[in-house]
Length: 285
Image (cartoon, rainbow, N blue to C red):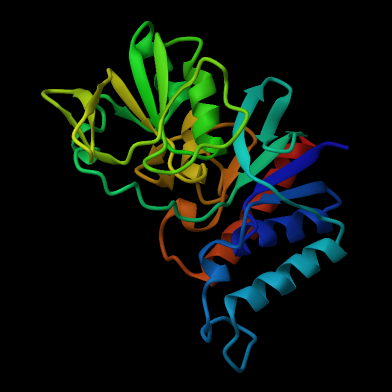
């Protein structure tokens, strides 16, 4: 049976999973945590609850409902998605999952690190997508800002192309098992600097590192990161979809906060249901 993989375990992802499972589709939900909803103490504007409830409670109930319907819930971190004619392969830190369709539902992205100069050089040496832009840095020196599995995956994409790749952990310790030819600099970063384009990274202790390009891979990859790499249209951190939550990439759908608009649970649940119903139609064609 072909499978649907949903990336994100919040209200949009779980709603999509529930609708897909009820349509007899083999469904996987891959999630790292409960996102912003997990930290919400009081919700009193969601239908069906006369008294306020916590976000953690809603997530617990949604997961239990999805599991009862046969959805496979996997707590992991997604590091990349590959697309071929026969479908998708979702790569995680624990393994990979083949899928005929994907729903992106990881919520709104975390903030870009507040480091001077990064915003100024976006499009002028600062990139958020190694798959998209590695080609432009053939034989050049680049750096990846981040310390998690997402950053390592971006570095692996750049290593066969660039002359050198340096992982900037910004004061954090890097994970184990790094590629042998990946350079690592753990010094805290003060600023990105240069003239018309980025030319160096300045550290708080006063030294600097000369680079031709900087790739931002802070925290974990979000829905917009995956969408851009697969060729879907985005506007900033928002994925562009049609009314049925379909992107321009066949078999790729998005739901919830990552599509913009009203950042409310009610909208996320609607988006998830719509995305699942459209994905089911796609999988049955």
